[in-house]
Image 1: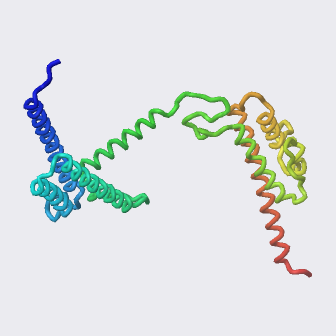
Image 2: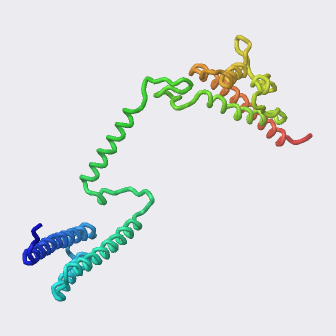
Image 3: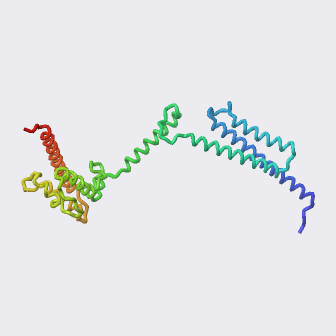
Length: 268
């Protein structure tokens, strides 16, 4: 195998050195331009005037180039110096960004018209309107889920079974205000039996049934039925619960008024 002469190896080495030096110089100049532009963009005035960050960056690069020329450093030493300077600038930039982010208020604040350009405000308004339109169009319509209120009605998002069962505790609390000795609520007690002491207070309809009878049927259906209550059954149960609660409130008010009259009436 033919070997290259020392002269050819010398020229190859020198050419590689020159190419590597040119590539390094291009990267060196590119990093300088990038850092200067970044310093201008992050400045409060966004200009070169009174921009000390740009002055420091330029002075650092001039110092590196001067040192390279004065000391006639070899490429490896020059790369080491450039690497150290780049690391120092990156760390400095990282610290500056972190301080800037820490100064941003984490509390919601309203942006005035003077704090954002007109194009930015128009873009935000357009995207907000688009998001509202998309969310509105994505709402379900003409869809019925068993046991849930239909979309677009006043019962939208209400689960009938849970809403009916939640009325038990409210009626029981009102019953205890009217009748302090009213029995405590048991988990599986029938409403007709548990509220039997307030049954004489409730009016009867044409069939001889009180709101408590309808309420008891709705609660039993919500407790034991495998299927979900319909909207009609839910309305019947809620109407009965509201009637019972209204009557208990009226009885409570009458009791308070009677107590007030007795306290204010002088004893003969």
